[in-house]
Image 1: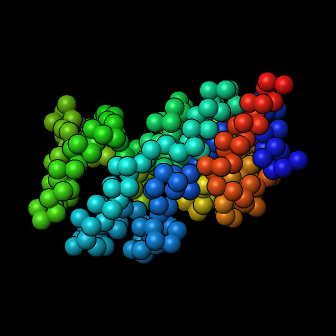
Image 2 (image 1 turned 90 degrees about the vertical axis):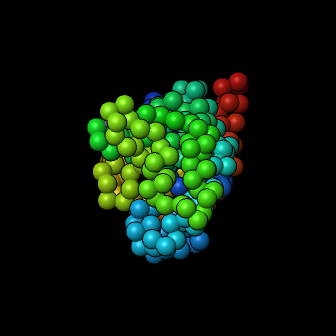
Length: 262
Ligand SMILES: [Zn+2]
């Protein structure tokens, strides 16, 4: 039996599956993983977009233009779509993600626990109220500011974001390095109560997110890793599929679909 077939068999006999995803799942959507070679953390020697900007104030425009351009064009890839389909089929209860790119929701996933927030949602810096937006609407606000490199500044960018109803300024609701993660209680319950966890494209080095697979494992879940390379989580996993998630997840999905038919 191939590892894909093994994974499908485990998922089909599970009671409650959960996916845990990291930057690797969005790489095929054109969003480079931050820590891999050429990624933001790799290039600038520090982690977190705000830290990068603080370290290189004169490169603010260049860094944000590169960061946003990839996100502007990004679309859900076959891995995101397969996870949404697994949820629809009842095989997954939800997705715990470290990504801020909104691609799980755009793919159709309904229960998404976004540990590091969501770039396409605004948070009031005064009262904390949040308001969602869409990728296109976000870039309709950001592009005019970003396109004028000579007058660009972080302040100008903040001014382009919508005001809260309380009158406060807003910022994208992502969790920067050192800030508290979001959705953690719900994600922790999902990890504690699942019996299968799909660990997809996660490096396993960012805490507290990386503790969730450990929590699932300690609570008795079977961990299936889907990653083209080894990660810090590999030793924890019962099964590791060394392949691109964009290939492996649709293959697992079609195994499950044909099992259902027969
Ligand atoms: Zn407010």
